[in-house]
Each structure stands twice: as C-alpha cells, then as structure tokens.
Length: 444
Image (cartoon, helix red, strand yellow):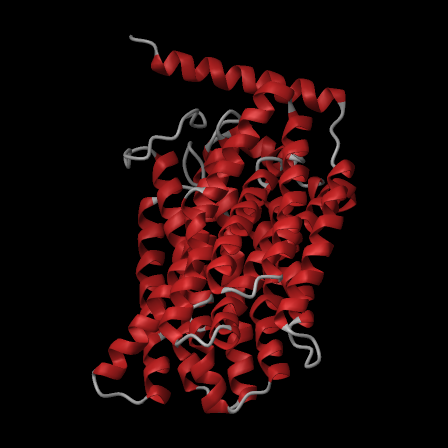
C-alpha cells in the first residue's frame, strides 16, 4: 500500500487516517497531562510555599528531560516502530501524571514534574507516524495538523483543569486535595488511548514493522540501508540549525504554556479560572495556525521547491520574534490578549513550516532527524526557563529578551540548504505523488 496523497478527515478506515487521527489524539492527551498542572500552579505555589526561583526550576524540569527523551524516542521509532513506542509512552507516562498528587514538598513535586516531562517526546512519534504515512505533496500539512491539534491540548488544559479543580472543590474537597485529584483525569485518559493506539494503528501503510521485516525483502533492505544514516544525521549542520530554529518556536510555546496563567494571574490581578481561560487562547490557535504553516510550506514547495519551504520558515520565525517583543510591552489587558493571539499565530505557523522541511533532510533517518529537531524545542524551553527563574527579572522583561533571541535565530534558516540533486529528487517524488492523487480522483 502506498503513502496517502490526500487527507480525508472523515475517513477512519485506511491505516493512514487511523494513524493520523490517533496520533493527534494521543499527542493531545500527552500535552494535556504534560501541562495539566501549569494552570494550577498558583494553588500549588501557595500550598508548598514556593519561591519564584523554585517555580522557575519546576518550569525547567518539566521540559528538560524531554530533550533527552525526544532523542531516544526518535531512535526507538526507527527500531521498533511508532505503534509500540506510542503504546508504551501513553501507558507508562500516565503514572507520574496521576501520582504527582502524592507530592508534599518542593523536592518531591520537582521530581514528579521532571518525570512527567518525558511524555513530551510523544511529539516525535506523532511526526514520525504521519511522515511515513503521507506522500510529499501533503506531508507538511499532515505533520502540521496532527502536531497542531495535539498542541491544542496545551491550550485546552489551561481552560479545563481549573474547571476540574473547581468541580472537586464543589464536591467538598479542600484546595490542597482538589488539585491532586484533578491530575488523575488526564492520566486515565492516556491509558485508555494507549490501548486504542495498540489495537487500531499500524506502523506503516503496508503493515507493522515486525511483520514487514519477516515478509518483505525490499523493506528489510531499506531498513539495513538506513543503519548508517544515524551518524550522517548527527553530522548534518542543517539538522542542528533546525534544532535551534525549532527551539525558537516550539520552545517559546512550551514556555508560554508554563507561565501564561500565572503571568495573567499576577500581572493583571485575575482569578485562577479567568487567567486560565485567557492563557488557553494561546494554545487554541493550534486549531488552525500550525496546520496553516504546514499547508503554506507544502504550497511553497510546489512553487519554489525545497528552498521555498525554507524561506517561508525563516520569514515566519522572524515575524514571531517581532510579535513577541510587542506582546511583552503590553500593560492593558485587552491589548495583551490581542497581541498574544497574533504572536501565537506566528509561533505555531513557524512550527508547522519547520516540520514541512524536516521530512526532506534525511529520508533514511526520519525518526532520528525528527527526534533531534523536536529535542531542540525543549532545549529552547529549558534555556528560556532560566530567564523566568531570575528573581531580579520580571516576566515582561524576560519575554522581551526572548523576542530578540527568536529574531536573531531566524537568520539560521540560511544554513538550511539543499543540493540540486536533493531538489530534483524532491521534484520527482512530488510529481509522482500528484500523479497518484490524480489517478485516485479519476473515475474508474
């Protein structure tokens, strides 16, 4: 079975679309569990008597381990396939999400927050699975849509977790108990999704990796040919340029997910539910913004080739940096909300545009490249986290500095270049995928 040349959202029968839908749902739930505690941090901070520096350390811990996890998960997808990898990720990752409620000190909370961060590597599996399921003419859109709808979990959790918290309070639980019970909800949902992922997806359009290695000689040959690709990917400077570029967009999104609720709570004197609702608007742009970035990447690829995808990526990242600096200067709540939404659009479009480039860097090591670039997002969040733990630096000042850094990093897109041979190969593959699509659409 060939890769899909179109995205049929209402089709749940083909392996391509089952992987599409379950991969974004899985990532959504992982994101929900990953940042479920963020909108409740004001309550946790008061109960555990945390300092600004300690809150900063918790923010850093939530994204630090994901850097390593994403590198490992990319290799694991190449090794055992995305289906089994995601099943393990969802079920095992649910454990620290549910058990963070056992924390009774800064140290124990920090350890659980660190462990929860590993589920952020789920992004790599989502991108890997859609990359091997969809043809070049739509792979950017498929990657961006599944990642964007998954990232939506970061916005929804800002809105929903305070409501779940309030529900437990209304049932008679104290605040100190309510946030602990609230975290059980995303954990249970992750376990159920892990079971569904195992039962309803396949690793590739042709079937599962284990079966293909035994029954398909051509597939086995491709697998053996890719063994040296890991080292090649590590030596490719384009991979590391994308590592930094993704850190400047997805790393910024993770940072905002961690601080937005507490930022609006402290700077605009809003209650927990209102601050969470406003913070959630940032993540809600993922409904379409990241998909738009991937879609525009595919269109740029159709018109200008691989270099068109790269130019688009660099331009959007530059605009993201400018928008972030503008947002950091807002002191009136309506203006802060409006500029945050504009800034959010550029952040998520930049992410989608980046992963419209990633599948073309090294086709023999998609998992490795996706893992390294994805790890860059978390590395960027870790670096940004150090800005927001400094006692003498306000959140607004930290955001302004971050905007300057993002603008500077956009220049690194000039390093991401493709040879004439790469451009020709991509052109042929694109032509073939368009021909396949035309054949599918033509009447029998």
